[in-house]
Length: 73
Image (cartoon, rainbow, N blue to C red):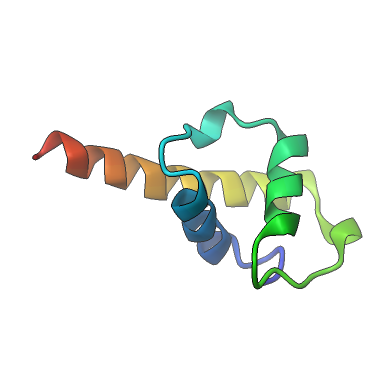
C-alpha cells in the first residue's frame, strides 16, 4: 500500500482498531499506525496532511458503516 491508497489503508486501520472513532485520532498517531501496517510500503516522508485526512475519512466510513450495522442487530 502507498499513501494514496486511502481506502485500503482505511479498511486495514478499521480491522486493527475496530472500536476506535477515527475522528478522535491525531494525525501524528495516524501516520505512525499507517507506517506500522503490514503491506504498507511507501516513503515515510511522502505523507502529507491531505493524504492523512483522506485516510482518516476512509477509515471513518468503514467505522461508521460497521457501527450502523451493529445498530441493526
